[in-house]
View 1 (tube, one colour):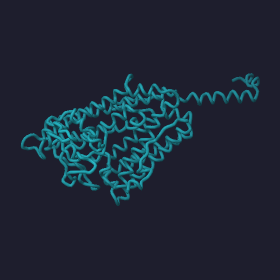
View 2 (tube, rainbow, N blue to C red):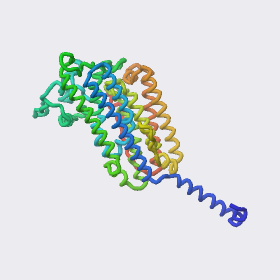
View 3 (cartoon, rainbow, N blue to C red):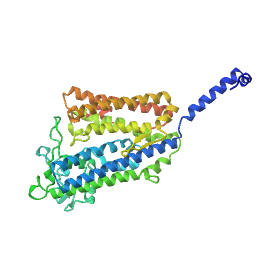
View 4 (tube, one colour):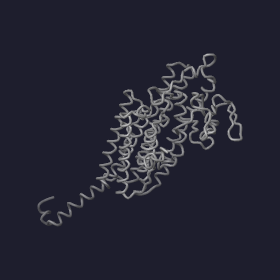
Length: 428
């Protein structure tokens, strides 16, 4: 701008001219909602794609175990299960606000499960439950099952059979498929309570002939083979839903304007609060009950919680690094919020970082020898605090999400939890 132009404009004109570009520049920083939604969908497709890769690697190790059941092949299959979890756990904010994902999630990650439905259990487990008539049905040991008034032919363990048993009797704890059914078949029950140690199923549970332990090794092998294949297929369907013409992406991209961003905030808020902070963490801490830990057979719960938190941060920032090394990124919900609600967005970014820091401390403690089920044990002040610190951070993070949406004028409903909202009901 030359001196002549400045003189011609005068002081008032100059102030107006300088102010206008600043406002326009600030507004220009806000990506269009449709571009934010595209990034959100692209990240989803990449995350679920990596979950498929992990499940296929698990399937290969399961096949190797069943071909030659040894301590080494069992250890390899267990490691493959643990390695498969992070990618899926990072997706879980997508199940809230996206109906297609919520419809499939129960097939993949339902928990807790009454393991007596599937296989043999310790006598202390008991043989009946007032809430669940299939509590000790033991599909693996019984080629015929009584389901209501019907007798079900379970001679062959097939996907059709396992689908029919998923939440049989409308009991949510009857989990016959998904990650945790596979987990139980690899580790067996964790009988250590809040003491050290995970499940310890022997590899000989899959040996054929005289070397078989606990009987029905052929049927147990069939169950593990079928349920692992179903997991691969279900995850592939979740990935497919985010393709260009997939159900989840199509439904999302039909939304218009700032209100279209509600599913993103719904997912971040509901996973932070009701699901992770409440049902997965606070409930177990209130009850000091290892049965309430997410990956209870493998003692992998700390990793599952940690990667839930990593995933939320990635969704907020609109950036995800794939297993193959490529990065998926684009206009983010963070960038949109920073332009429209800068103060609240900055605070929320800090809150995501704080939650991740607390989760890292919890993960480090578990990796150093204090498993999550030990952390939530009664009388373990150090462990209880490590878990409570993460819960507190998740609650604060939820409030940060709510502050951003309030400023943006976007309406969402965050899933609640009695464990956080009415803990007295939990202890009754």
